[in-house]
Length: 320
Image (cartoon, rainbow, N blue to C red):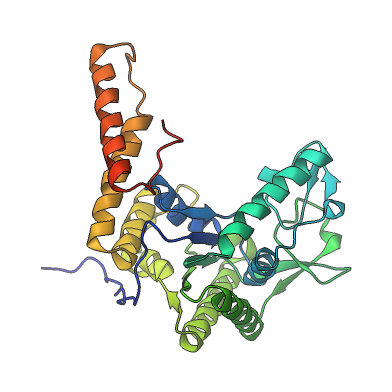
């Protein structure tokens, strides 16, 4: 039979993700797809407490801030277009009132700082080697917030500086959390605003960075999400309409491959059962007052209660 694609081999990893592990996911918008997959199945996870993070050097500083519990100072916030913002945080945490913005940022920081002290699995998705540094301090920023370009210098980071900085902070986390395992991925999202060739050079540096880290640190492992989309799927039907981001189908395929790689058969079976209950609890019928829907709700709640009795660490509080 004619082969229609080249399968990307997935290595056997020396650990598995389980429901009672503490997970922190940090990185580009692609890590949010994996993170949402885990959230929908009720794994214990904190997803991108700062919002989306693209650059490895920014990740290093944010991980260090969480590890050292360095709460952002309200004096670091600035006003732009009527909202108070912080260079480390996504615009979703901006607010018209300074006090409210500071509270939102502190809450996000505390969520990440709490989990990082009892961390089992850290998932990092590297988005781009291009980043922006403040001209006056040289500090990498997570978000420019549409500030004047004169405030920043755009720079393509070197492999050596990214791998050295990431390696150092990961080793520090490993000392605090001896059971820590790190999953590295490179985002398949194309950053064409940098240019087509420039995007390829950027991704190449990220791939070399992960290679150095996985070769040097035995608790750091690479999952080939980038290669699955570009080499195995390799068709524009697997991209969204913008031709930059993976389509819903591609995300589902890669997420399932991730689950097969890092979860036992028992955990995958449990997660499938959990996901079915989550979908049922969220169901919005055409006739919510009907007897059929009332019975459906009751049966679903009974299933959720029985699952909670077997696995007390699984919570459906949001849906219920």
